[in-house]
Length: 160
Image 1 (cartoon, rainbow, N blue to C red):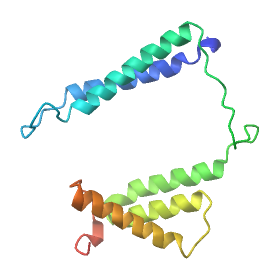
Image 2: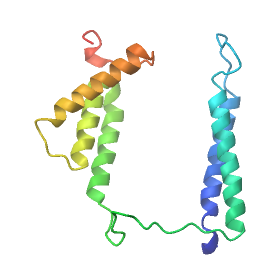
Image 3: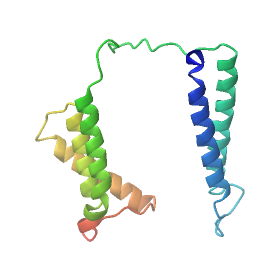
Image 4: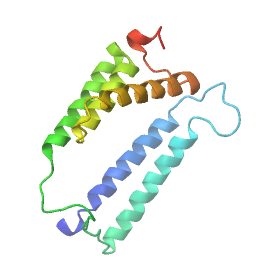
């Protein structure tokens, strides 16, 4: 079975495609929908695409197709993974998910952006928090105000 290990990816893609299609087809249609394109269209296309890719990949693997090992241009594949960076990024993302409701998106997003920059190696302690705060605030305004995607404002709800 080791020579057909790519079939695991096929099974994962197949399961994901079925999940997306099931969720899309059980979605209640919006009464305010106008025209043929509604909220189901993109998930149905993505789900069908996942199923198609899963089947095509399975056929290729069963016919003897093999994925090439990553050569990596700037990556030394003999070096172990940097676990510290991965753990710091995981902690930053988890903290962002936990803090978004009580602090709101502008503050939690700023912490997320600054923490990600720090975890990835930036050591500009005076500049990074300012850039993170600005990026978070602009993201909040674009999504919440311009696009109409409601994001929690937290304590800054009345200020922004």
